[in-house]
Length: 166
Image 1 (spheres, rainbow, N blue to C red):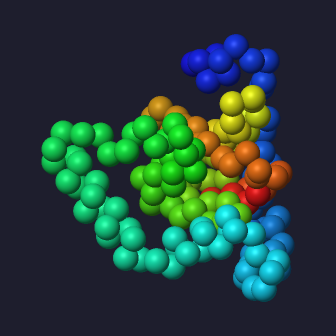
Image 2: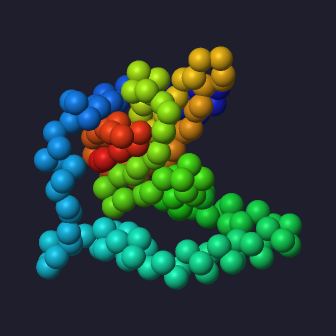
């Protein structure tokens, strides 16, 4: 299975250290990133606009409903063209949120010892693998595309939520 994701490359999955509330500094969580003035990056402004524009999600939902009713898979070709949309869809299915500098996924009921996070850097794109182990059940595994410009991945598990920042 892992070889299918590597596509013949010699890249390997690298483990991401998961911090808990006791190991994370609360001051980092309390920082509120605001984009003001000329220091703002266009991609960050665009992401903030989509977060604040609630009416767009209603339009997208209605559009998706029409496509599904007509038997079409909603915009599946866009996930190949724009991996950011694929990431947003996958995080949305997990009831999480995408932030300009990362994402947050609720994992209520899981312990930090049950969560394993690793990254894969290959020529095509960067990927993030999240594995949640549960006794008596198959592992929950998701592989998410992450933006190529994302820096080092920092993972925090606080109050049943997995916060990933880059």
